[in-house]
Length: 323
Ligand code: DHB
Ligand code: FE
Image 1 (cartoon, protein in one colour):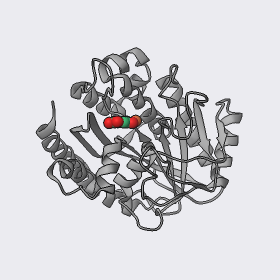
Image 2 (cartoon, protein in one colour):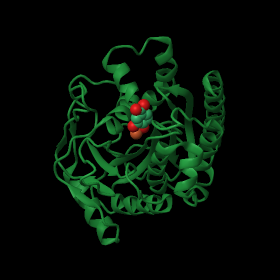
Image 3 (tube, protein in one colour):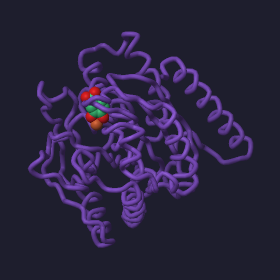
Image 4 (cartoon, rainbow, N blue to C red):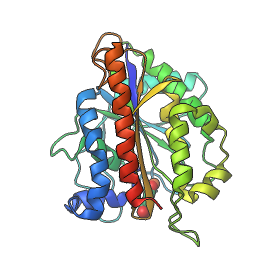
């Protein structure tokens, strides 16, 4: 049986990709951002997922105003990086997992979520930037196949947070009915608060962002009741990207362990948020989620203090740049 071992969420600011591509990651402005993902890369190297499902949004690269599917599942064998105006990013072509993707499409569509099936698609910064942040910058190939799930958050009306959360649950059911023994990590991407244009361009609301992160771990159902207008008002027009994090969260257990969090402001004009949530349920068979070799009470206590230390570090880093 396949299983979802953890959820990872991360902003996907395109300037982060440009900093990598132009070798500027060591500059102080960018080091502040990248240093928050060092632990995450270590976590990912230990988790070694067999497949990553990456929930992201296309920014008029694969789709355009002429055609915007609400939920589009990438079922192709590969996904090249898109040309977003200055040539495709120098990242490896992503390999897909057509068999699992087709299985998810079947299960989710028969569960009455009307996904669009995509058999050819290029992927933009919405997907490639979080891949870099969690897997680094591989020369030849990404360490695991990827199933992209593109969500419309660029043209009204996007799906509700509740619909996204329920889709996450349907994806989990689909994964768990796949017979092969696979460990799957699901990504939610985008956000946090940001507004790119108009009189409120540059809007960042750290208080709202942090409360979103708190509730993502503790009370995601509360987040499912946030209407679009609140995302727009509190987190800026592009803050609506955060509904995608609820697909990731819906695919996890009700109670999860927050193993890492990072928040910094700004990158470009955007608040950068990142969280790693592990399912508590022990993975049957194959390797367990990273960071939990045995669930003795001693190691549980150590895990708790690790989380507390990670949170403290997060706040230290965040407080430097928080508005
Ligand atoms: C920017 C674009 C994005 O898609 C995003 O999620 C954050 C920031 C930008 O253009 O700066
Ligand atoms: Fe975006």
